[in-house]
Length: 117
Image 1 (tube, rainbow, N blue to C red):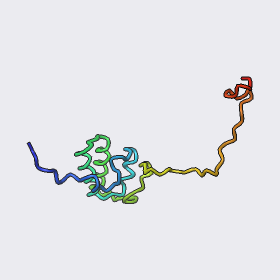
Image 2 (cartoon, rainbow, N blue to C red):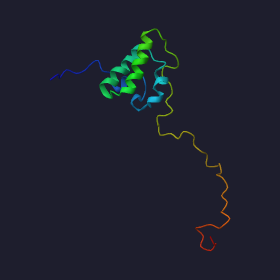
Image 3 (spheres, rainbow, N blue to C red):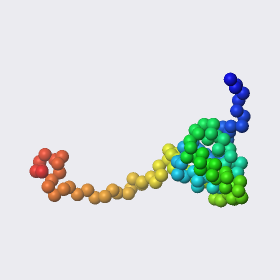
Image 4 (cartoon, helix red, strand yellow):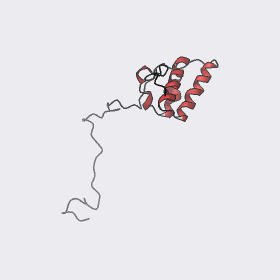
């Protein structure tokens, strides 16, 4: 049995993407486009040790191969993550904004017993 700690596996807090574990797979290619080769290699090591999700590994390994083949990082190094819930409402509605007008149906209001249906 191997009791030696795996020092080469990065920890979650050391990853180049915030909330990496919660990012949707569809946004991953955009999120990693600004990362350097070492950063993507770090994500590959983390994914293999923790989730080992095949679709995610395919995306990461493809990007790593592209970078090793001469591709250059494009886009921001740490893109925004609007899909990650931060507890803040995305677009809070002001209470002063009135809602749509409510018109009762022509046959009467079903919750009012004095009006016929």
